[in-house]
Amino acid sequence: MMQAGATAPEPTTVTVDLGRRSYDILIGRGVIVRAGSEIALRLPDARAAIVTDETVARLHLETLTVSLAAAGIEHVTVTIPPGEETKSFAGLGRVIDALLAARIERGDVIIAFGGGVVGDLAGFAAAIIRRGVPVIQIPTTLLAQVDSSVGGKTGINTARGKNLVGAFHQPSLVLADSGILDSLPAREFNAGYAEVAKYGLIGDADFFAWLEGNWRAIAAGWPEREHAIAVSCRAKAKAVAADERDHGVRALLNFGHTFGHALEAAAGYSDRLLHGEAVAIGMVLAHEFSVRHDLSPPADTGRVVDHLAEVGLPTRISDVPGDKPSAEALMERIAQDKKVEHGRLNLILTRGIGQAFVARDVDGSDVEAFLAEKLSQ
Ligand SMILES: NC(=O)c1ccc[n+]([C@@H]2O[C@H](COP(=O)([O-])OP(=O)(O)OC[C@H]3O[C@@H](n4cnc5c(N)ncnc54)[C@H](O)[C@@H]3O)[C@@H](O)[C@H]2O)c1
Ligand SMILES: [Zn+2]
Image (cartoon, rainbow, N blue to C red; front, top):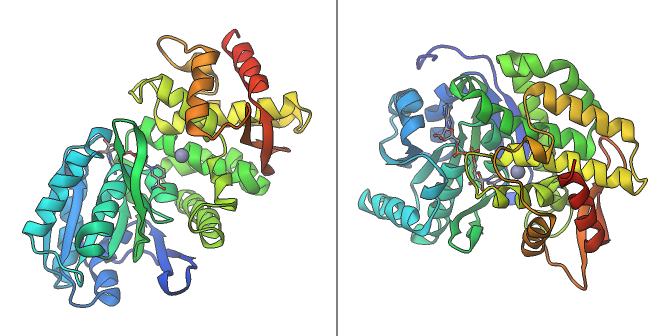
């Protein structure tokens, strides 16, 4: 890891354009070393509360605290256990108690330093303590860098489902250090990569083609990784700026997610299937369902399957270890996830790589028959 004071290359900046709530995403290897000075620049005199998980703290916390100290920023750290279970009312209560005990005020800042779990939980705590304290996102997983840290969605899970309680709370700054991903287990990296590929599949065929040729360099941490993160953040920033509260075009970002969420739920949100892995299979299913309706060329599905499999992602329902769900059970999950009216639902389908669209009024029984077919293969 780079030491404070060492010169890192200039980061790439992507701006999320939201009027007075606009903010920058700084992307680059070693960008975390600048955390102190970048925060001091934007929030002078703020004290900081770092919220992180035990794994990230062990690997990377010192780099961050050294940077804050060098910029004269007073700080405390709140460390939570890693894992989705912490993104709960109980976990939120503990984080809020620690923040209040540290006398975090509205003029201070909360730094969410970790993956999407930390980002969502700390972001939500920041949204509600003292009716809102600024938050800075320093995402440390690929998924968090290209997806969850950008856009202001924060929240927790409840016994009745994932992400059911939360708030929109845009960060004041996002620092995506591409080098910090070097310590991420390959499986977690690949899961995040599914979301990177998603941006190509939704609306950028050239980017998808570039990924097909450059994924090894991205995995290896060469400058291509920074480029892939920047392109992804630009796509997400554009969708967020056009539709901050998720009533329209932001829906396209859920490409592959309706099928994916159903598979994730069927696997019990367990280690059997990570979110990004479920999305990889879901994106293949969305392509196949589109081909079935003559919307998309079969050759594009072939490219999607080949690329995701080459990277090391699952592409078939049968790739998920353990018992297979029934088509009926998957359909029930889809109905819970989506509003199904008179057996019809909205689904994000595609006319080919880079051409996803919202299909309205899809016949639920047709989706179920399709899933039954896939499950029998
Ligand atoms: N807010 C949004 O818009 C949004 C979007 C997508 C997903 N999410 C949420 O994000 C969460 C998933 O995020 P995630 O995939 O980052 O999972 P995560 O936060 O659980 O991180 C995955 C694992 O990697 C470890 N880790 C993190 N950074 C590391 C590093 N640099 N080196 C080594 N290990 C590291 C963590 O400790 C954890 O064990 C879910 O709760 C999901 O609901 C939110
Ligand atoms: Zn996702």
